[in-house]
Length: 440
Ligand SMILES: *[C@@H]1O[C@H](CO)[C@@H](O)[C@H](O)[C@H]1NC(C)=O
Ligand SMILES: *[C@@H]1O[C@H](CO)[C@@H](O)[C@H](O)[C@H]1NC(C)=O
Ligand SMILES: *[C@@H]1O[C@H](CO)[C@@H](O)[C@H](O)[C@H]1NC(C)=O
Ligand SMILES: *[C@@H]1O[C@H](CO)[C@@H](O)[C@H](O)[C@H]1NC(C)=O
Ligand SMILES: *[C@@H]1O[C@H](CO)[C@@H](O)[C@H](O)[C@H]1NC(C)=O
Ligand SMILES: *[C@@H]1O[C@H](CO)[C@@H](O)[C@H](O)[C@H]1NC(C)=O
Ligand SMILES: *[C@@H]1O[C@H](CO)[C@@H](O)[C@H](O)[C@H]1NC(C)=O
Ligand SMILES: *[C@@H]1O[C@H](CO)[C@@H](O)[C@H](O)[C@H]1NC(C)=O
Ligand SMILES: *[C@@H]1O[C@H](CO)[C@@H](O)[C@H](O)[C@H]1NC(C)=O
Ligand SMILES: *[C@@H]1O[C@H](CO)[C@@H](O)[C@H](O)[C@H]1NC(C)=O
Ligand SMILES: *[C@@H]1O[C@H](CO)[C@@H](O)[C@H](O)[C@H]1NC(C)=O
Ligand SMILES: *[C@@H]1O[C@H](CO)[C@@H](O)[C@H](O)[C@H]1NC(C)=O
Image (cartoon, rainbow, N blue to C red; front, top):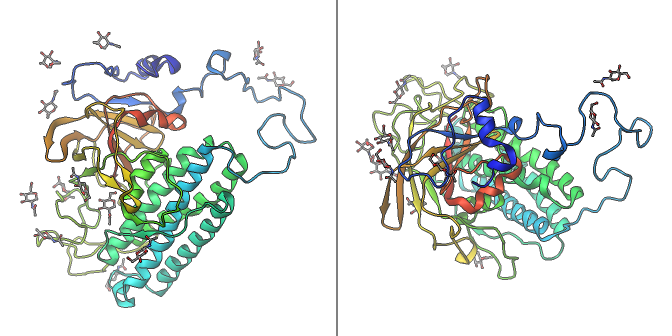
């Protein structure tokens, strides 16, 4: 198995009394047991010996002469040399290009909502002139981010494209903005530390912090708990591109081609609906605004006093910190590869390095946790399966569940052990996804 050797994965699991991981070549009808790729505490934090690559004795005392007054020795790019805010490799260029595609869409998206809906449309969901001004400001922030990245990339940088958005109501608009900023944020977290250009990473860091705040604002517009996790998770560029590309319909022909992978789409067909007073009610409407008579809240924003149990309005916070429970069955539908997606349909979904779907990888917080896919069935153009939400805390002896917030599920062919800094090792095993699971 791929990573067990490096990190002593099996030993770590044994240490914490967790179940032994099923190996990737195990029987196809493996048990329903959850296996978990543990957090970074198992992957170097506790180690300080040469064999792990960690040679620094963390005693609290300085171990070398300082490199200058009040300047402990070590660090990268801090020797006074002139910073070079320029991509230094294809990896850098392609990562930044992906962010530019993302930021271009966000600027367009935020403005599209202001353009498409009237003041009264916004008022009906409890959003007033101040809130609209904030959306406008966020669009302008995106313009600033675009200018920054265009400057870093130079003349080949891509311009605005045409987009197709799935929203029909203000509520869906806000929800989609929340989704887009969520994956935008996580995509950057996944590669920032790997950029060759540390200087460019510095600027991108100061961009993505803003994006994270935007995501939180959209959560607050929906009356959601603003940040129901301890750690914001990281995904790979290919996962981010998979989520973004379907909404980009056309770009000018001279736009640089994105080199990342488009995985087949993965849909969660019973995502919780946080707009309901009881978000865990079975939800099979196609949109959050499609309510049946038994579902009491017509809108999460309206202070509808006649809507029993509805206390959900835009706000700084609410005390609903979670919508789902461990063991909850999640229904998945994955596409087969070979679909045309993205600008001018010029990209094709591909999972050629992966085998059949066997696991759901739950990428959340610091962890990638696997559950077994059950009831895997082929359907026209794809497959369906069920799996169950794992019951894991982010590390032993804490209460924080791994799965919360708007997190990512990927269907994989194996349960390889990955942690945030090597999450890209998951790419070759992705059968479909990610999909966003709305756990809290
Ligand atoms: C996989 O698991 C089976 C059953 O536990 C075991 O016999 C086999 O050696 C394992 N294979 C690998 C590659 O770890
Ligand atoms: C599947 O489960 C059955 C019943 O538990 C068992 O006999 C069989 O060895 C398992 N593995 C495969 C590959 O069918
Ligand atoms: C997994 O759990 C489901 C529901 O309890 C059960 O129907 C199924 O047989 C289980 N699969 C295996 C391989 O144990
Ligand atoms: C770390 O500390 C131990 C004990 O003091 C010492 O033997 C060892 O040489 C130190 N290693 C390094 C890399 O400084
Ligand atoms: C740190 O330095 C102090 C002062 O030299 C010494 O007394 C102490 O033992 C050192 N601590 C460790 C953990 O090396
Ligand atoms: C965007 O759509 C418009 C209207 O269909 C079209 O004229 C334009 O060429 C498209 N632009 C790009 C960059 O695809
Ligand atoms: C919410 O809905 C779920 C699923 O129908 C049900 O199990 C749970 O009891 C409900 N909770 C409340 C507070 O009504
Ligand atoms: C929603 O799901 C329930 C339970 O599976 C089913 O009875 C109902 O017909 C579904 N409703 C729609 C609109 O699909
Ligand atoms: C809402 O759900 C009903 C079934 O309850 C369905 O017939 C209708 O097409 C849905 N409307 C939209 C806009 O999705
Ligand atoms: C909802 O409206 C009622 C009646 O006007 C008011 O008392 C209550 O404070 C409002 N709640 C919120 C959260 O705005
Ligand atoms: C997943 O959702 C997309 C977008 O709604 C749809 O085009 C695709 O057919 C769905 N795939 C499956 C397998 O449900
Ligand atoms: C946003 O993502 C959630 C899952 O986190 C999904 O249930 C919802 O349909 C998405 N909203 C829109 C408008 O696409």
